[in-house]
Length: 322
Length: 247
Ligand SMILES: Cc1cc2nc3c(=O)[nH]c(=O)nc-3n(C[C@H](O)[C@H](O)[C@H](O)COP(=O)(O)OP(=O)(O)OC[C@H]3O[C@@H](n4cnc5c(N)ncnc54)[C@H](O)[C@@H]3O)c2cc1C
Ligand SMILES: Nc1ncnc2c1ncn2[C@@H]1O[C@H](COP(=O)(O)O)[C@@H](O)[C@H]1O
Image (cartoon, rainbow over all chains, first blue to last red; front, side, top):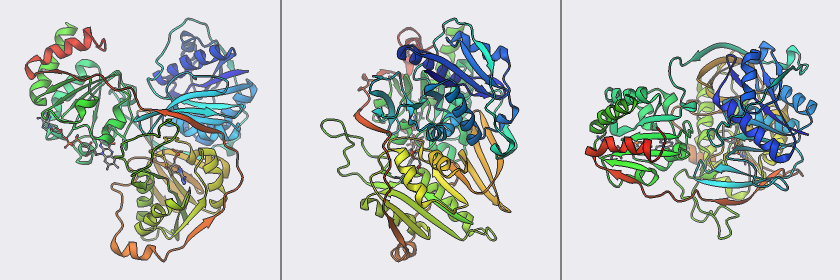
C-alpha cells in the first residue's frame, strides 16, 4: 500500500503548493506505515523533480507527455487512477488549487474512493479515517469521516506548511497509456501575470478596501507590498468598481487565501470578506472606525487613517530591512 | 442546445454559523436559504446565453437534490428565468450521493453548469463527480463562457493567470467569479410565471454513502486585537517581527 501524491507543475516548475502536498503526503505515509510515491504529469525536468527529495520523497513517477499541458481534467484523472492502481495507493493527496480541486472529484469516482477536499491537517485517526476540513468558508471546521477503503484528499493551502527533510528521489518513467481521444480540450491562449507575486502563493498579502477612496490611492499599498515581497488584494466592491483587477478580489466569492500575514487597509470586515482571509495566521487592520468588524478578526490594529499609516509602515519596513 | 444548471440550496452568506448542542449538526433555526452564489451566477450566464440571438439554446433546466423545503430555492431559479426544474427527493448526504442522483436526471444536456463549491460544506466535488459519472469533459474555475458554432468557448483561471480554450459539447462547466457580473433578481412577472412552470419530483436511487461529518467546531476564539495609535505605526511593524515573528 502507499500514499500517492500528485505534484502539479506550472510550465515545468513545481510551486510551493506542490512541495506542501509532498510534505503532507510523506507525513501521512509515515503515520500509516506505508510508502509515499509522488506522481508528475507533463514536461518537468528530472532536476526539478529531484527537488522533491528535499521534502522526503524517495520515488517519483514521471510522465513527461506534453499533452498534459492543456490541464485536461479528465485525462489527468485517468492518468492518476492508473498511477494509483500501479502503486497500490489507498490514499491520494492533491493540493487544493485550481487544478487539484478540479481533478480530485473525477479521480475519486474512478477509484471508488471517498473524497474530502480542503483538509487542514493530518488525519485525527486512521481507523476510522477521520480528518478535519474547512467548512462554511472558514467559519467552521468539520470532522470528516471517510468510509471507503480508498481515499482522496485535497490539502488546503498553507495549512500544513513545507517540511524539509533530505532524501534522494528516484525518478521512474511512467506511462498511463492514454490515447489521443482521452484529450478533449484545445487551449487557444494563456495569459500569465508576470513579475508579480501570486496571490495564492504569497506569504504576505497587502489588501485595500473601499476606505482607500479610489484607485489613485493604491501607490502606498503597492509600495508596502513591494517592500515586503507581498501580493496585493482587495475587497469585492473595489474590484467591482474597477479600481483593481478581478484577480485581486478575496473573500467568499473571490479567492480564498491563507497567508502568514494579511494587511487590511480600509476594509470593514464583512462576513463574506473574512471568509476568504480568516485562514491567515496574523491579520493587521487599519480602519478609521473603531467599531469596524475587521478588528474582531485582527490580531493587530490601528484605529486611524490608512493614508497616514501606510507611509509609516513603508518606512518601518525599510528600516527593518536596512 | 439544452442547458442544465445545478442548484445548491445553502444558508444566506451572512448567516451566523452555529451547531446543535452536541456539535454534530448545523443548526438551521432561523436560517434564510438561498441559491448557492456560484449557481446563481451560472443561471444568470445561462439566461444571457439564451437571450443572445442565434445562440440556439432551447431550454434551461435547473436541478437540485433535496427535500421539499428546497423547492422555494428552485422556484426562485424558475422566477429568474429557468424553464423547468427537477428535484430529486432526497437528503443531500455527500457529494458522491448527490452526483449519483443527479446523474439520473442529467442525460441529454449539451452544457451543464455547476458551482465551484457550495458555500456550506465547501465540498468542491459535485460538478467533477457528475462529469465523471456521465463520462463527459469538465472544465473548472470557469470565469467566462460563450457558445460559438457548437463549440463551447471557455475562459478559466489557472494558477497565476487565465486561459482561453474550446471544447466540444457535451461539457460540464464548473464556474466561479466572473462567469456573470451580477446575479439576476427575479422580476414580478418572473415570479408569477414561475408558479406555472413545471417542477418535476424524482425518486432517488439507492447509493452508498462515502463520507459524512462526525462533528463540527467553531474556530478557536481569537485573542483580542492589539491596538496601536496612528503615531505608533512603526511599533506595530516591530511587533510583527519580534512578537508575531511573521516578518
Ligand atoms: C453573496 C455575497 C458575497 C460577497 N462576497 C464578498 C467577497 O468575496 N469579498 C468581499 O470583500 N466582499 C464580499 N461581499 C461584500 C461584503 O458584504 C461587503 O460589502 C464588502 O466586503 C465591503 O467592502 P469594503 O470593506 O471594502 O467596503 P466598506 O464596507 O464600505 O468599508 C470601508 C471601510 O473603510 C473604512 N475607512 C474609510 N476611510 C478610511 C481611511 N481613510 N482609513 C482607514 N479606513 C477607512 C471605513 O471605516 C469602513 O470600515 C459579498 C456580499 C454578498 C451579498
Ligand atoms: N444538493 C445539490 N443539488 C444540486 N446541485 C448541487 C447540490 N449540491 C451541490 N450541487 C452543485 O455542485 C456544486 C458544488 O457543490 P459541492 O461539491 O457540494 O461544494 C454546487 O455549486 C452546485 O452547482
